[in-house]
Amino acid sequence: MIKRFFSLNSFTPLETERLLLCLPELEDYPQWVELRAASQTFLKPYEPTWGETELARFSFRHRVKKARADASADKAYAFLIFEKGENPRLVGGLNLSNIRRRVAQAVTLGYWVGADQINKGIMTEAVARVLPFIFDELGLHRAEAACLVHNHRSMRVLEKNGFMREGQAEGYLKIDGKWQDHVLFGLTKERYQKA
Image (cartoon, rainbow, N blue to C red; front, top):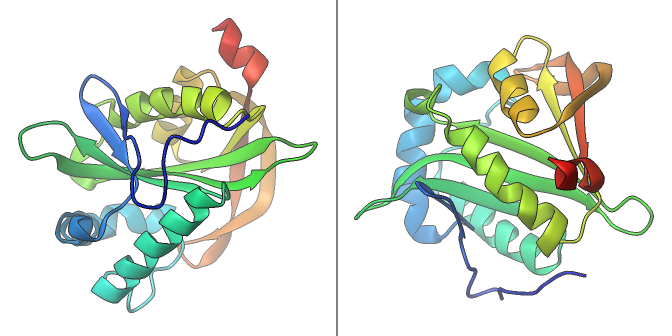
């Protein structure tokens, strides 16, 4: 059973000791464009090819509108991750996409962090916080993720949070302009609750 604790106009951020996970707002654009632009070289090998308008304000406006509509319809949840402080600072993003209800009750997890934020435990902490949202708030049974076969940092994030390797998929996603193999991970509610 989904606990509806937000509407299109309000959302209770998910919090950790040092982070806030929030749905994007139009006011986040300056920080978002600065972080994404500064991290483009770092992120490029791990993401789909960026379009010419990737960093444009109108593209971000569309992202915000889509994130709100998807969350309201329980299709997907796109979070921006902020480091707490007097002026919270954007450090990355986390997406829950491809929510399947009915017999699957599953979601796909994806994330990114700014180039200046790697190896600080930020994503491990953010994923740990989103798991109760997935299993308790959304009432889903399974979380899935995929990592490029050479992305060992991302694999460690998942393993630290209880995900298990389930196999390898050939040509799984088109990343950086080419179809690439990925290691598949999964976490069930039962395994999460035992941890």
